[in-house]
Image 1 (cartoon, rainbow, N blue to C red):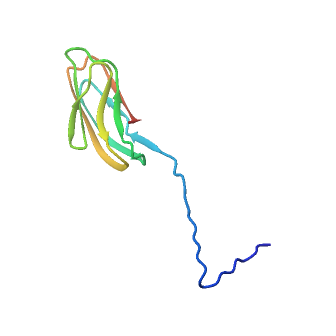
Image 2 (image 1 turned 45 degrees about the horizontal axis):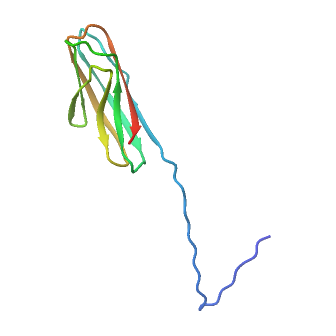
Image 3 (image 1 turned 90 degrees about the vertical axis):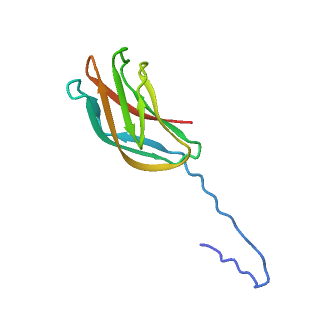
Length: 122
């Protein structure tokens, strides 16, 4: 059984409340697979991050030959993918939640190409 606290009008008091919110970041996209015949893929990218530290969106893909060119259009910017197979697509400076279209264009692909998008905290 609980006990009530009683105070006079002249009594002073206070309390504080605090909470710890876990850092959570996630990214999801439609499968982006480029066929050499069409050279294009379109989809949607959903990102969520409550971190104030910022984060990078990265594209992982197979290595590109010297004659192959792949470009990603996302959030008003175009980025050429690196031949190495790991390419930064965007940097976010703080918390964010969005759903944006993403488009991929390619030239001279020698074989099919899949692109995996991920998020890395800064």
